[in-house]
Image (cartoon, rainbow, N blue to C red; front, side, top):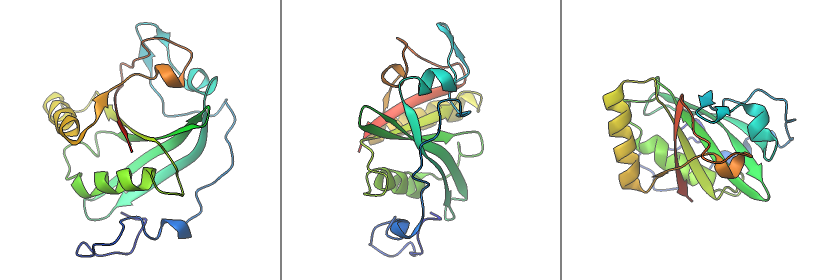
Amino acid sequence: MGMHNKSNTDNDSLVSDSGNRRFGGRRHDSGAQLPTPSTSPYGPVNSAAFASHAHVAEWVEIWDYAGGVRFRGFVGEKDGDRALFIFFDRSVIGKDLKQGLMSLLELSGSKDFDCTKLVVCVDRAADAEDVRDLSRDLGWVGFELTTLDSWSNRTACTSDKWLFLEMEV
């Protein structure tokens, strides 16, 4: 990951150098354009719907140099609950994600992010077989399908663009 200077042979924390980075601790206003879902059967789901009950605490971009993957996302916060939302778009799906996923789990629970959940947002437009395989593999690790109900003011809040899987950290 771009967050550390450790070799793959070290047994130390994968985010040991994250304390040396500035994570942009300012709050973003509710009008910010978030990379949230496009539409659902229950009407549009956009940044305003997410931000009406929750807000973005930090934006993140994380590089996994070993896997050749860039992860983008944000930390969402609502009622003291924090979750790291990471987008697995077409450029991520199909790559070796083991090391990067381990780092994301560790990073989300670190004192710098202090999240209780990691939410992976899988691009539904990617190759269907790759999406199916990735979803199955994430399920084996402990991720479960979820909606954005607790982060928005809607019920059964799903997306036509993203498949949401979450895990407690």
